[in-house]
Image (spheres, chains in turn purple, cyan):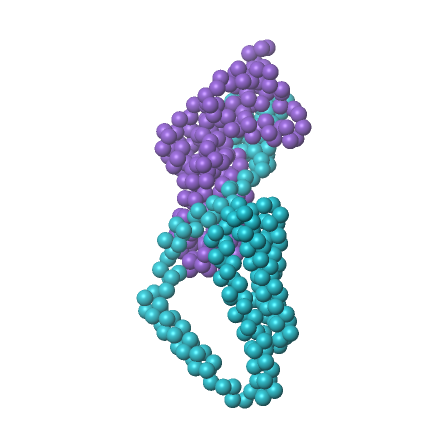
Amino acid sequence: MFDVPDDPLVIARARKGDLAAMEALYRSYEEPVYTLGRRLLRRPEEAEEVLQETFLEVLKSLRGFRGDGPLGLWIRKIAVNKALMRIRARGLRAEDAGPDGANLSEERAGRPAFKAGALVERLHLEAAFGRLSEVARAVVWLHDVEGFTHDEIAQMMKKTPSFSKSQLARAHARLRNYLTGEHEESPCIQATKTS
Amino acid sequence: MHPSDENLLALRDGEASEEVAAHVSQCPRCASEVERLRGMAQGLRELPSLRPPSDAWCALRPALREGLPESAGLSAVGAVWAALMVLMLGVSFFVLMRQPAIHEDPAVARQRLALREKLEPLQARSRSLESALAEYRVKQGVQSGTTAGTIAYLEDGLAIVDLQLSLFQDDDTEPDTLVRLWQERVKLLSALVEVNATRGAMAQI
């Protein structure tokens, strides 16, 4: 999503404070930044704040952008940091809880298995992802979607790579749980227990 | 013993040990789980992107103006120079406009004068009608649907005429069009004043 081709002319004009060029940059990246904020944070208002904070920093410090990598990756890094700062401020609580603290096992009862059509699958996946804790969502999104390594995630979250790996595994177990109603253990471990 | 979720994820990401890879290659359930994990990542990547509210940029712009780099605005010296340039240009323009066109064709000059004589009364009439209209707008009260529709229709027409006038304003190569547009403007303004006057009279009854 952040792989928008750079326009050196627009970047140069934005560096000089040209508002039209700044808006052009904003329009190119508003969706990826906002989407990232929405996926990592629970409240849409917070995603809007991340969008604002990110572009304030990007456009005010554009002169510091050395251009040794794509602008999109630089913007993404700033946006991720802004979102993670909010999660860190809440204490990096890793335990999973539904958005409203609802009992998940009760909610899951009667839920159809994750095997309907593509659109329904997408909606289920989106809903299941939304039920993960912010930390778990951040790790899954940053690793599986944005392609950050565990080392990079650990650095950004000020944790160890093992923390990132275990969070990813637990989050995927939770997702499987939400989508199929199975237990959180891997299917192989279940198979071992039942055999 | 089957590999843990963490190991299966590592395999999915191409970071697993040979031992895990060997197990998964012979275990259909683990292989299917790795596939599921791949599908999950793919599914997340394919979730639609989300659009921020349309007014988000408007909210950001004032904050950006405050913090623009110095080079974006004019420095004090630059501002003085720019002001001087504008002043000089203005003075030159004023002087040139007051001087008669030395090399102007007498026929063209006559045409220009004739056009001005036609336009000036229309423009004066237009101004006085606008003043009258402004007074009615200040006193504006409740209006019926029909009246509101008529006013909206006339104002739309006025906007179109104004747009056309703005395109022809500095072009006296089509004097007839200019005169026709100003006449049209006066006609629309008169109608608007009339509608407002009737509405005012009806309100008093």
